[in-house]
Amino acid sequence: MSHIAVFGAGSWGTAFSTILAGGGNDVRIWGRRQEVVDQINAGVNEDYLPQTRLSERISASTDPEEVVGDAEIVVLSVPSQSLRDNLTGWAPLLAGGDRVVVSLMKGVELGTTKRMSEVIAEVGQVPTERIAVVSGPNLAREIVQQQPAASVVACADVASAERVAAACSTDYFRPYTSADIVGAEVGGAVKNVIALAVGMAEGMGLGDNTKASIITRGLAETTRLGVALGADPRTLSGLAGVGDLIATCMSPLSRNHAFGVSLGQGMTVEQVQAEKRQTAEGVKSCASILELARHHGVDVPITEQVNNAVNHGHSVQNMVRALLSRARKHETD
Ligand SMILES: NC(=O)c1ccc[n+]([C@@H]2O[C@H](COP(=O)([O-])OP(=O)(O)OC[C@H]3O[C@@H](n4cnc5c(N)ncnc54)[C@H](O)[C@@H]3O)[C@@H](O)[C@H]2O)c1
Ligand SMILES: O=P(O)(O)OC[C@H](O)CO
Image (cartoon, rainbow, N blue to C red; front, side, top):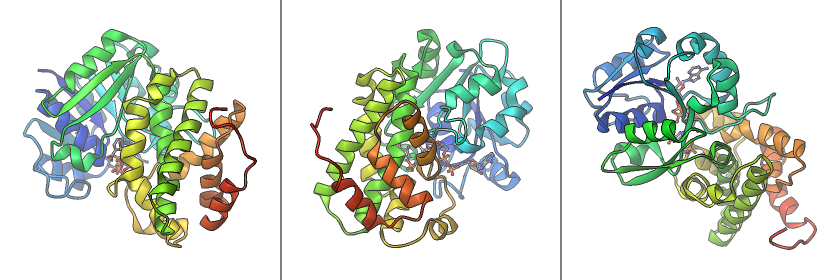
């Protein structure tokens, strides 16, 4: 049994803590808000995971130092665009020792186009062999119901990946190790943007042929971008790629999918944001992923159209027209 620190008391930080507790670890969660911390210490997190009883192995605090203590693994699960600011305060707690820092986040930083592991390395001063990413088809609500699921623990260092995988192995959660951190992060971030597009199509009343076409072409652009950044294409056809793409694009539980549905039904971005409190990473990351792709000369037409709809006021009808009127091409080009 070991002690693990989790930064972020939202839906996935809390759900992943239940996996870690199920793996026999004592888990301490850092939360920003005292009322959420108090709830977790009383065995619930009603704001993010209503009707879920949390393990007695899970406790919470608003004090980062108390949360880290002698933790062997530190897990980060805050919204991607807030990671840099938060890490500035937490960096002294992460550096040194042989602590593994795990990113659960699925986004790309606006302004720098950095992946979350790159932000952790830069701001947290954590060496690459101690940074891991956990990513896969893992909708928080299904995880806390202990429905069987698999995921990927990616890290440049095999021993670190195995330490994290051992900590999050339970009889319902099966982690596979990987050395491809780039592939895992690109798969996790881009699928949110594709899920927005699928949600928009659904909101417009379009059916399964349309959704399957977007998912498949979404995988093509995810793979092109991943490979340009150095990913192994097999990662993108694995759990952190196609697995997470399917779960997020098809599930009504996905916040990105749901956000897209509301846009497709005619709501504005501002209206949807005012209504939904939880993080839909693709809404911000569509711009940074597009910028990253352009920088590497990679064509990402679906991401480009989602960015047009989210950030430039284009209509969803315009998005469909723009995608279908592109010049014909070979499928595998
Ligand atoms: N929910 C899921 O099913 C799921 C599954 C896998 C991965 N993820 C990823 O995990 C990450 C976290 O998502 P989530 O689902 O927990 O989001 P969430 O919206 O449920 O929770 C986010 C948490 O971060 C806190 N927060 C918000 N702004 C903050 C800030 N500026 N500084 C510090 N804390 C802040 C919120 O109070 C909340 O506790 C995202 O990158 C998401 O893509 C989510
Ligand atoms: O609810 P979403 O859209 O953030 O997706 C949740 C997870 O990433 C699914 O694996």
